[in-house]
Amino acid sequence: MQNNKRPETMERITTPALAQAFIAEQIAAIKAQVGDKKVLLALSGGVDSSVVAALLIRAIGKNLVCVHVNHGLLRKGEPEQVIQVFRHEMDANLIYVDAVDRFLDKLAGVAEPEQKRKIIGAEFIRVFEEEAHKQEGIQFLAQGTIYPDILESGPVKAHHNVGGLPEDLQFELVEPLKFLFKDEVRVVGHELGLPDNMVYRQPFPGPGLGVRCVGAITRDRLEAVRESDAILREEFAKAGLEGKVWQYFTIVPDFKTVGVKNNVRCFEWPVVLRAVNTRDAMTATVEDVPFALLQKITARITAEVPGVNRVLFDLTPKPTGTIEWE
Ligand code: XMP
Image (cartoon, rainbow, N blue to C red; front, top):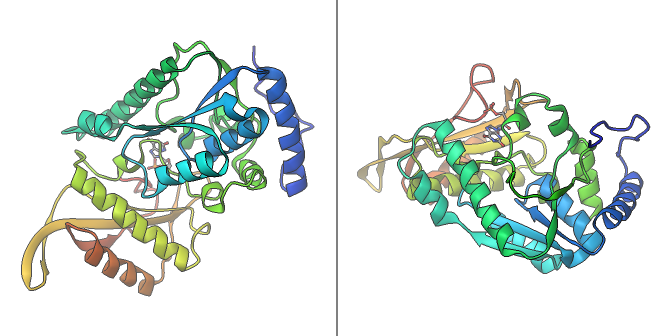
């Protein structure tokens, strides 16, 4: 029976020194648990899995086998950053799986949101399992479980992270962050040398851009989501809003409206901007984004993103709107 209660004596990790003490303690614990055996980790590039990876790399080096599955629904630059940070900078044993076609083929024509989520979750497990079976001598599975996952507080993680992991893989779990809250994970990640834009990044749903390409996903509309999201993030960062606004992203609905480009009428998609603040994702308020910034983002998206002729800003708090559009 695993102990899943945070020890009452455990001090809240708020300083670099406390984080360093936690890191030293966990490295010793991981070494004691794992010895010279191999550990497998699904590394999404999100905060939790990245911090687990960095910790295990310190503890056991190449005996950690990281698997990064690109399901085609990641934000612009994410797979590249995972490869850069973990393979090139941390010298990790990283397997990169390009599963983009597999996922997009399975999702073709599927418009129902929960069905899309199920397909993404199930396919993720299948791809991960295939990679696990290719590996010899794995005895442990590392997971970025954090304390709120154990407490199951609210909806954020209840449907979080693509699907969970394969049940038929008979591995012993390594969960070094399981008693930490998110802010503590970030302090630890920072101390482990992970880049700030990885450690302090906004929450990103497991099904990724899939829930923001409303209705049946098509490759061209998915690119419109990805490119407009990249522009929004870039402009928010330039305006000093990165790390200040809880979550901000773009949505592309599956309808077109008429517009005019270069004196020619065009029938293209709108892009919706969403920027919200919340404590626990149960309710949310809309960020008061400066109008001039919204205009600048609109000008860039309509000029730079193919197939888009209109930009809207979602003014709806939660309730009545959820944070995501599906
Ligand atoms: P909603 O849209 O329910 O979102 O207001 C609340 C928070 O949960 C995130 N979210 C998800 N995260 N898988 C996830 O891992 C999902 O399927 C999913 N749906 C919503 C959302 O981004 C927000 O932070």
